[in-house]
Amino acid sequence: MFQLDNRTDWSAGLYPGWGRNRQRQGTLVFKVGYTFDAAGNLSPLPQPTIEETDRYRGDPETSSLIAANDIAPFKQGGELLLYGSAHPAGSGDSILQIKVNLRQRNNQFWSKELRVFGPRSWKRRLFAAFPSAPAPIERPVELVFENAYGGTDPRNPEESFPANPAGVGFSLRGFSTKGLSLPRIEYGPSFITSPASRVKTAGFGPLAPHWEPRCQESAAIDTESLAFGGCPWSKEPSETLYNSAPLDQRFDRPFEGVLTLQLKGLVADTSQDILIHLPVVKPFVSFEGRPEIEIAPPQCDTLVIDTDQQQIHLIWRTALPLDVENPIRGWIVLRDPEAEAAQAENPAEEDPQEIIHS
Image (tube, rainbow, N blue to C red; front, side, top):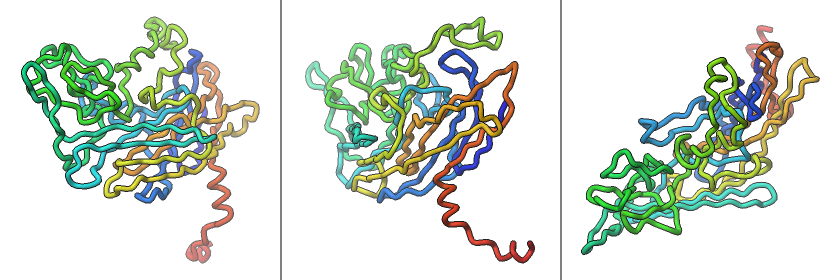
């Protein structure tokens, strides 16, 4: 198989697998990273970690993903994932509004807003139960699905909310509110009003493969083919098979051009919205010594934001020919022409010691 010559500060890897056409393919995945400050200023983050597996917070059956793997062979369009916490702007706040805005090419605008509550409990009046007033939020609230609506039924532990088995507040018939927690994060305009409420799961992070709606996008497995090292899918899988973002964080096309982010209530020690302009990345991929082999231009299909670490990652991928019986040998070269041009204009000064010893 070919080798990778990564001439950039980005992380990159080659991963064998199967394309959506059920043919073997290699996938070149590379990850561009930045750190940002409270003023929205960016700095390059060399060699960010490529997540090669899904990672869970605990038991995969009952916990959410800490990170979704980056090495999928394909995705549909683009998707945005965000990890982080909601930060109170001042003392005494019991409800927070957090928001992420994204402006893309041609001024296409996307926005998502969640409501974060202080601790709440059920109050009873006659034969009804209702949420108490939220207490003040004294510390950041982690934006994990464990803090959102869902979970398992208190009386029937085998029954769980299919869109979020890791959450809190789910009751199959609305009984047994004693000790039943209320979600800290909700997604309006419909909020939880009773133990029998069925509200939308709120969050910005990746969905596990066995959660709805991802489980409905799974592919039928061909066990016989798989046993002999063939394609694991009995028919062409859904183009969204590897998309892990909530449906409202998916986009019809990959990301390109200038991206502008606006973050509200998501970064510590600032009460101001943070505006971040992501630079245009123009990667170049070639097959060294084999100009007849065409490589599809890589596409940026995943934008990952970590507001606790104050990092942003752009994940790119492209498919490469992979023939096990007649392997193509050579080098896949990944370059960053913009960085190369900047270095040519401002070459580093020569080390005096190197001049003396040369």
